[in-house]
Amino acid sequence: MAKKKVSICYKCSNCGFVQPRWLGRCPECSSWNTLEECITDPNALSSVAPGQIASKVKPMPLSDVTAMDDDRFSTGIEEFDRVLGGKGATKRSAILLGGEPGIGKSTLLLQTCAAFSKTKSGLVLYVSGEESSSQIKSRANRLNVDCENIQIMPTMRLEDILDALNELKPALVIIDSIQTVYSIEGGIIPGTVNQLKYCTNELVGWVKEHESVLIMTCHVTKDGNIAGPKALEHMVDTVISFERNNDEIRFLRAYKNRFGSVDELGIFEMTATGLVPVTDPSTMFITRREGKTPNGVAVCAVFEGTRVFLVEIQALTVPAKSSLTRVYSDKIDSARVSRVAAVIEKRTGLRFSDQDIYINVAGGVRLTESAIDASLAAALYSARTGVAIKDGTVLIGELSLAGEIRPVGRIKQRARTAISLGYKTVVAPEKEDGVTVVTNISDLIKLELNSDD
Ligand code: TYD
Ligand code: MG
Image (cartoon, rainbow, N blue to C red):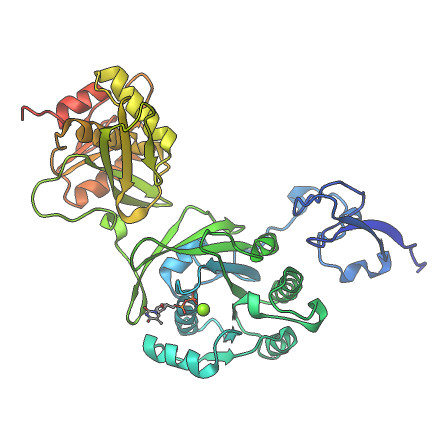
């Protein structure tokens, strides 16, 4: 067969994406002025990863394409599976697990290794560039995990890891952490962006060719930036972050997931014997108290993925120290708080425009759903008037600028959860079992914040 001529293409010096025409900005990683001219050999195209040489891929009808099987491995840990897309990790996929140092990434992954090996899906290889074998063994003892089917490999050299992968063909590969892995090919110093990209590319390349799942940890700085590994996010299928609130509770959340939703939250508690899944988290964001509910406190029912959580919103208002009033709220968008306060002021005459407003959410979760408006309004009104909301009440609904309480999605499920947890009154704008229907802010105040009762 006659040899085809070599042709010119343009390769991004940042992410390695190849494309036929020069562009000012790389379409893959969005970096500017990084496309450099290079020569491609069409005879060698079959050895290039799919999608790398865009010019040689021909269009085809989508109807002729066979879908990728949704073939998954359960990690053996339900909360982890939930975050990965329900039934676990998709085979041939690469997962990046980010989190600040000491949050519990290595603990979670060692527990995952043990749980995975119990599922008998195949061999587990745990590569650690950060800890020695005996350190890992002490942690395993502390966690009381069965080490029978876990192979460990304390190394930082990519070539050793790839040799082990080709020899053992493990079903689950853990790299703890990707920042410690280095290759002579990728430059000398471990941890540089070039090294990170090179090593990640090689490992992801391996997993794409095998019935295996790759999980790589990476350290994230305190402000939430995945230093360096930010550049890896587009190279992997799933990016998961391990976060904490103020205490021992840890949240596992997907930020990118090619094989599932990014709404689900996995919740664990760090105990003396490792991470324990919080199986019934519905009331974990509620402050338990003896006696009556203080003023300024209201409970709402929010969704995180498919689960309903009851969350307590706390409000405080104090006369502003200057003519400029402020809203201090980091868990609910300040603009939403200002809007709800303005609606109450306009519709009921209760003044907020000379007050500083402080909003807190128990348990430190961030609330973005519009369904929280009714309880936010009730908390604000209660804080300002000093009248507490009736005990055992959950409020659901969006507040319009006209002062109406508007329906939100899945009210039935929210109400059912609240009632099953012993709440006496569920206030919402739509008729459902056990719901007291309220459709505007004035009626809500009359019902729940009546000082004459
Ligand atoms: P680790 O998994 O080493 O964190 P990372 O890999 O993210 O840096 O977790 C370290 C912390 O977890 C450390 O502060 C001790 C605590 N820990 C427990 O509280 N209980 C346990 O059973 C284990 C193994 C660790
Ligand atoms: Mg670690």
